[in-house]
Length: 376
Image (cartoon, rainbow, N blue to C red):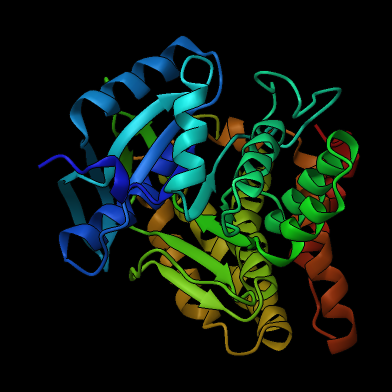
């Protein structure tokens, strides 16, 4: 049965396959097990034709397929689900008045995943009939809600940006001061709205047509505890934590570091016949070298820096994710901006190791190789 719009208290900005395989899927699971009735209204914010096609399909069907493929506890997973959390969808460019009405009268939570440039504002204004940027649209909608005398909302951004909730809050507050010059609105944004930092971690590897997604079994949505925070649902993949920093560092210096070190060794050994992460992790030399650097250098350092984070278990889970036989994650793609990635992912671990007198010869060699190659 299709959900009704009054149930769509979660307003999701973006039709990306990631959100369909992550937040909207979690909402669907909560509805299915009767632990929540908070449904999703999807908002198509860009002018991309493919996005409009997905929005139309969601509005028409109300549910979509999610195909979960990969490994879990050493066993192959190949599951097909029907996610029924979507109560409707709107195209901002064509249905702004309906969106504003819903935002004022029904919304309680805002979820977003607007891509790498999603927070860019440039010369946009929330006073425009249809602001171009996501922050411009959000500011305009929040002002309409404020003027209607409605309570504030909880923002749960999913962009891959450290302290994303606070970054979004600052951008919206700046737009609000510039456009409205209303001190009461400024105060409402701070006191009545809840701006939450979150960290997302799931590979949603492919779209399904006309709408849907293929995702790996692993999933995490870490939510930083914030005063007045109330979550729309509970799910095994959702963790409300006192601080996101340990989770960000764990992901950066285990998952992301391992990707970059694999690329370093792949280049160093000249293994031209290996193209994907899943192939690399099955190649004995690459797997052994990756395991050595992780177990002898990275994990000993991180265990002292991040106590209580169950790093060994996270590393085993990371290896299993790399082994996913269904995922074509190209090493050449990971190799982009290699020197910058080394600086963010490997170099800090070397710096952390120094006070503990933990040698890091493998990490040091990878950094030096990139410098010698010019960081390509």
